[in-house]
Amino acid sequence: MKPLIAAATVALSMMEPALAADATATTAASELQITRARTRGINPGPADWFTGTVKVEMLYTPVGAEHASAGNVTFSPGARTAWHSHPLGQTLVVTAGIGRVQRWGGPLEEIRVGDVVHIPAHVKHWHGAAPDWMEQVSNEQYRAELN
Ligand code: MN
Image (tube, rainbow, N blue to C red; front, side, top):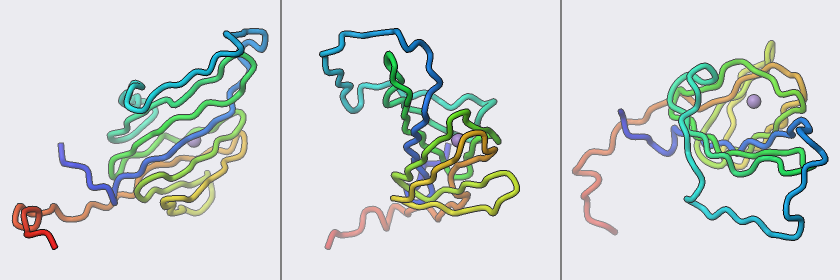
């Protein structure tokens, strides 16, 4: 597997309202729930949902009457979702790299760090990383004297 180059890898924080599963479900209502960085599972994106190498880290899922979930999804260069839609819409926040997004019948859009994309409910779309690879960093370049 080729090493990833940060500039060509895109990481999206994806927030999606969730359909109400069970509004009557409750948890220990007064307890804070903290999941520490680097303790959550990171799983490969399923092949029937994605093309290319994709890593998915769920940040949170709805609890009780809540209606939102969020995940960090990292797309290697050229990786992308299948065409899909979300019943309650989706918001993408680009946290690293350069990506692409397109709605069905719309223009291909480039998205960069800090860009926020709101995808309305039921709008068919895809999103993923830009395809570009930059050249490898040579050993000579990597080991050069620091300034
Ligand atoms: Mn989507």
